[in-house]
Image 1 (cartoon, chains in turn orange, brown):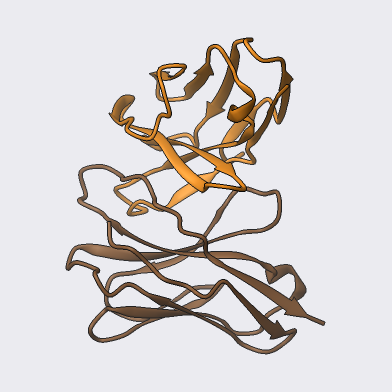
Image 2 (image 1 turned 135 degrees about the vertical axis):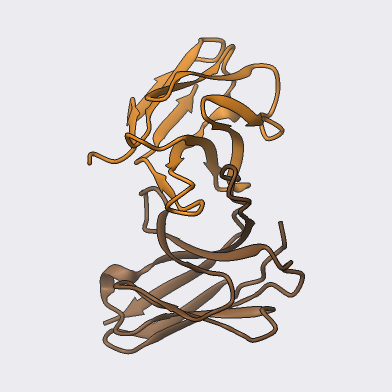
Length: 115
Length: 113
């Protein structure tokens, strides 16, 4: 299995631009998570989905952030418009729940720099 | 989810056992203890988890006290590649779906040659 795949690995953009981060979970997993990591705040949960349905988006910082999961094998996290304070590493994780009891497998992350 | 407390940093000599403590005094009966680690610039990696019994796998052992208010992660023969930030997380699992994890600051474990 290729694991959780995130793209792009690095993104540099200018303030005000739209940014889309992508995630492909491990095949067969039915839960998907988006986290953000900064030096100041550490690792924070942004949103997660069970069976493609958003369960908890209370960690999404503001309306500029949105996440979708149109099917079991793909999710996006969009920031529009982006701001310099959005610069962080964004991780996607997936979990199979029934067998693995909430063991989450993380992707390599997308390092976002907003200038 | 219950809050956890870990030392900020620890050193361990290569080849020795690394024992990482975690306090979770407010843990509830249906909450599991999970350990993850994050090697620099990589995504977090699952290590081990347990409910109330001690657990062992190919990476580590997890010792949970009888009252479940604290636990210790043991890396039996630490190598330089074990240098990482180790996170102790308490999380509820209902069986009906996964929950997000709440990461604290973790313990920065440095393995000394």
